[in-house]
Length: 198
Image (cartoon, rainbow, N blue to C red; front, side):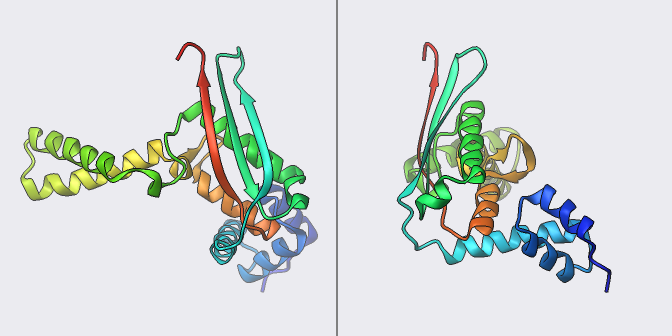
């Protein structure tokens, strides 16, 4: 068993923003392995998020982000369960980061289940036709179309987009991490993006 020093706990806390006791426990569980401890905390956040999915989140903030030059802006309503969490710096930073993501990446939907069936069918048909035009057999074209549909979701669904500040994480990942830290359900209720002249 590796010795878990306070310096190691501090390093993990700086990297993840998780609580001191959570960081210590993660390092103990992973025998002092920093990468494994980060993964442990991320999984714990996702598990907490799943447990709290049925809770009501009607507190929160509306956060705006205006890109330099004032040509692009975004507003996001981010909800949580209590006013206490809504006022924390971590929650406000999360809302700001999501507003910045919306301004930069122009998502069309919050989650995959908001994409209507007709749009999915149309995209699949386009991708399948493209694959056939590239000379792929029908059964292969079907698989290629499904793969390209996944890329469509990653591009246009906010929760599935790669986070602009850390491409190794999705927006869902950073929300789950905050859920793990605060122990409350957090959800994006709505967003709007403005582009001057559009």
